[in-house]
Image 1 (tube, rainbow, N blue to C red):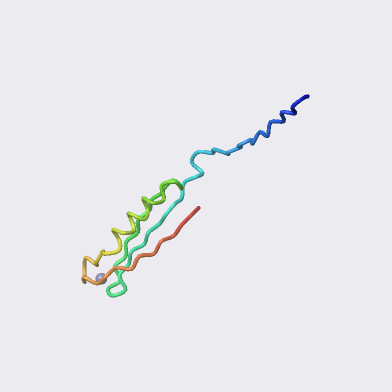
Image 2: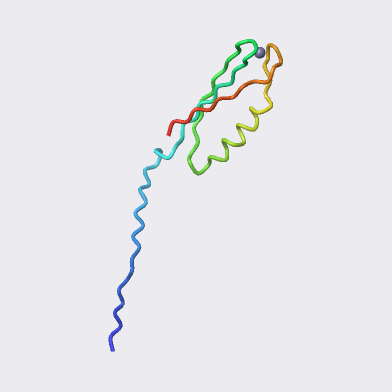
Length: 79
Ligand SMILES: [Zn+2]
């Protein structure tokens, strides 16, 4: 009796193309009250996207330097 040992080789072809996994994030904080505006740019590896969540948490309670109004946060992603 012969056992057909057909290897079901699951070829994992992971295209590890290094830096292409980075997500560019642009954060624009602005004050609708006095027009104050500031831009930040950062990039995160896709797997570390939770770092972004931490960064956004910081922005959440930011208030305007000039008038003390709560700042508006816009995020732009460039994948
Ligand atoms: Zn302001």
